[in-house]
Image (tube, rainbow, N blue to C red; front, side):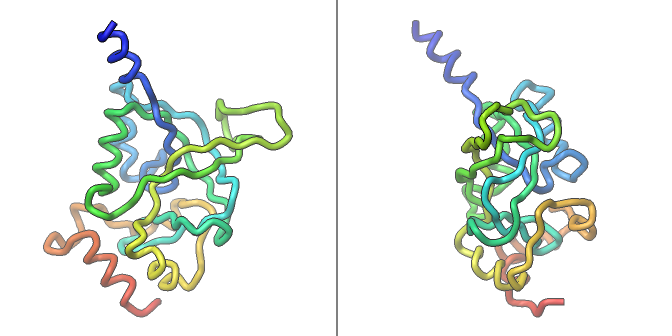
Length: 188
């Protein structure tokens, strides 16, 4: 009996909405590919947020979703079902314990997915609640101001141009240092 409960606990997946470098074709997608190979993640389709959210770039063209519903655009991203093991690897990448990002709920429009999603329903308008990595509250407002209230609806090759991988950034500064420098520097 105890063994059975253990098995069900490990099969519980979390739906995670990715909007930036974890998407196919971007620099951190290798982690997602690893998780798919090990059975810890599966691609569910391309979806849009039900509400508008600001999606902005921070230092080194790193994308940040701001938890400010009603501002910005409806954001397009990829949805993955992730195992508990996969989720802890994503949390580690996103710096959850270090105050980089926070994983919170977001509502996606499931009326019509952009391409091949399998959450489709026949209802006239439907949505589902999943999780996403938002910018941490400690710098969210400043990041929004630094972007002068400008955001985009999808992180594409165009927005990613100039992205600098973590290992290629100055190593003596922390991620939060980079953000502090970015938000206090003049806009270009």
